[in-house]
Image 1 (tube, rainbow over the protein chains, first blue to last red):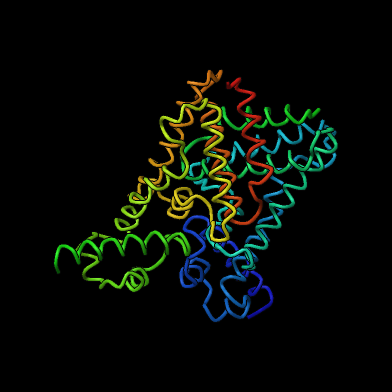
Image 2: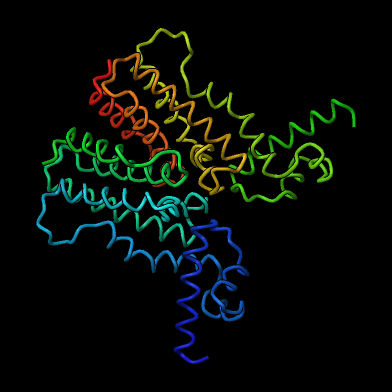
Length: 189
Length: 189
């Protein structure tokens, strides 16, 4: 296989793992992944040592798009409170898509049921980075307890995403007022 | 098979489905369930038309214990605010167990990815009943927007349970202050 063909097979496998594990769950079989990617199992195992490693790599690859979609630009000069609200407005617009099944980094961890699984570790780190963003903005905005506020915000982020994902509720009319109450209680500017 | 033997096989299947689907996920195989219950597949399919039906029945059977553990006694005469806080105190003590993987009714719906699956319907109904409890207490406690408060409380309940289940956080020092902020903002007595 040429280097180019290899890199394209790799991309297709990462795409298939991202799409199918999100749609059907992390227990999606290797056969289904290889079929969707148009790659032989042999080639797959030459590129990834296991299905778990493929899943971890696909979550990793998705992380920068995830962050770009959710977070405000680093230099947007808006007040910390607005920068936090930006994340929840983005989350709300994602959640109204009919294909939305919850934040993929939360769902993967729930389904894997093993914090030491390579894909759980990637997912955990991505969400820790989001929590760290909340904490930094909370500090900048003068929150009375930035650590507590960051934990509350990621809790609300995950709760709303999980409930929208199972169609139990929608973030509309819920997420913004809830976050506002928490920001106010923390005396956030 | 005698009626007694049948009822005991049925109970063992329900127990196995509850325990294994929680520990390993709803994709647990029929073979594993039957083996754990010590029941033949033939007997299983005589009692349940499908694995999905068995899973739905096991969630249904668990519902009364779930409600009893979480909710205060109907006639405990405590103020609505305390009755709501009781639920979260119970949730917090459940979440510290090392086997805790999140609320089973949330997790089952996330994993099944199909709101029309019989087990998703059972799980959805159980959580709707919990939301209805919150709404009733919110009304009794004079909340300014009982429907919004109920949605906020179940969101926080599910968010905290999901995050504790994946060991991303613990409800300690988080759940009680978050619920208190929401109750205060709703002017709950």
